Image 1 (cartoon, rainbow, N blue to C red):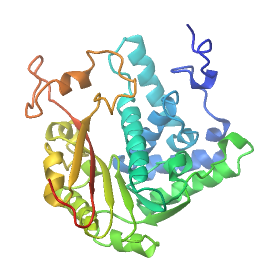
Image 2 (cartoon, rainbow, N blue to C red):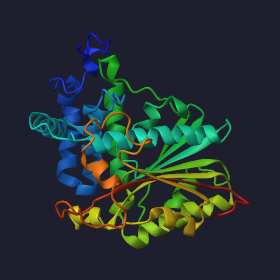
Image 3 (cartoon, one colour):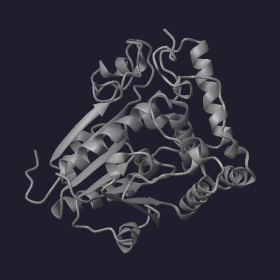
Image 4 (spheres, rainbow, N blue to C red):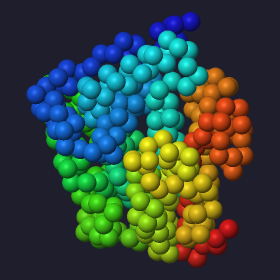
Length: 337
């Protein structure tokens, strides 16, 4: 049965031919992405690649702004990888990790906000990059969102949103779903990022969800630990939820020059910092699957079936590169388990 027969709109069908929005070819958007290519380092540019993943997995993720944040180059590059994987009948299609990770963070963010029992809450996106949650998640309607990243990243993001708002195509107009969004220019490797956040009307004693998606492993060990400890300390003031992904040591070897911080046992690390309730998931687990991993012999299932202490796969000797998805929380008068 075809997707159309199933009632799936044509533009939501998986892996249809790549059709880019007209706005991507405008002078304004082209100039912004040209500056990204020439001026940003690999860690900053990765935000565009992640956005391309969200855009091309549109049958799973609703993100109408992702194509604009990705830019034409990354859209075409990721599309070609997906096309090649499909032709080769690959067990894992390019971008599936991005799709599953995005949906995991979305679902846990919604659950965390619900756990507060209603009322206003804060959501902090550290290393926000080209994150579009304030424009696509209805669960943020009562939440104040703070996007923290380098000044140049936030400026380009603002410029792209302005170009979209001024577009003749109403479908490209950004519609904010969060109560409010504040952009905080700060460097997480400096000691003043928390101070800058509070200067932007962040309230330390207000219920807060901290979202660290695709950021920790770009930091040095000392910087990552300081960030995590700063968040853990908030558990002494208010109900605090942390959502973060961690690489194990083997995963960082994929690019030693890019990835630095790792934790083989983040579910033990976080309680030692002050979180009382910690849950770990891996790609392919029941809460990190979303029906996107169809082949039972995919890489992620192979890894999940091995003890986490094993560093190399016994079948072929390849490194066991794992991405851990962590949900942790704490509050005043908590009991650490």
